[in-house]
Length: 249
Ligand code: NAD
Ligand code: ZN
Image 1 (cartoon, helix red, strand yellow):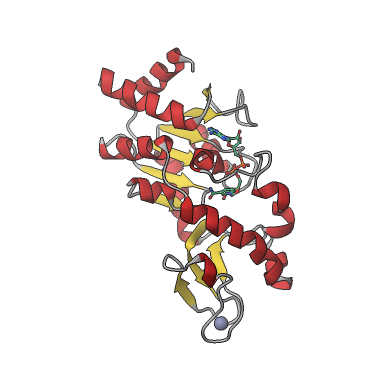
Image 2 (spheres, rainbow, N blue to C red):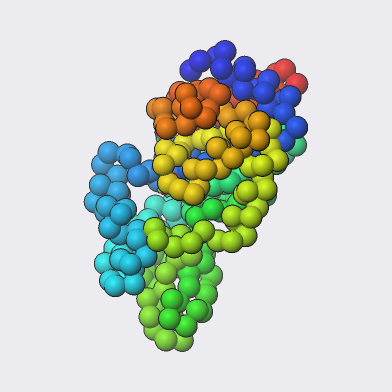
């Protein structure tokens, strides 16, 4: 871990008028939920392009539910890791305004963050594509899956954004507002290739924000949009930054 960069991030956060975080699947890998790139993970078995596309759900929901059921069982078991908890601590200290997340696992809220914008929706509710009925999914047990609509008995779809579906309007508006008004953005555990989400740090940068990347490897943002990249696991880097903030503030 590069201690100088940890100190630099802590200073940037302390001097910032408004800091936000933009997170991706990588922040939840240490909670046991594989990202799209992890070897041996869920996504080696289920190609996201094939299973996470809205056409796949429309044409063969039974097949897509094979993948959804495994994703649900991982999410039900998962607990926030030190990276999620570190961001919650920053919010409590008044140093983090909001989190824009591409994740659908609810772990930022479980860690205690109150200002979370879910850019790609959530697993907590499920809806019927036929009759628009929505149910609370938080009490569902794995044996209840795949869940069916009680009104028309179609298979329900979790309210996550599949490829080919629009981003929820409110999330678009609020994340644009946050990215235009922040002075620091912490970009954590995202490959920054899924659009329009990946335009968030670009928008922030255009408005003069400092872009701090935390990732195990470089991404298309590195050396282009990011001011600097702190390489390593988010579960170690984020708490180290929080400790440094506490030391120098
Ligand atoms: P991605 O899988 O494309 O990229 C993950 C990134 O995280 C990579 O750059 C990787 O190097 C990095 N990474 C992995 N482990 C890390 C760690 N411990 N610390 C720091 N960085 C780490 O993920 P994405 O950019 O979020 O895009 C994938 C899409 O898939 C998103 O839309 C997301 O909604 C969805 N998805 C969500 C979940 C979830 O909710 N947890 C899981 C898988 C996929
Ligand atoms: Zn229905």
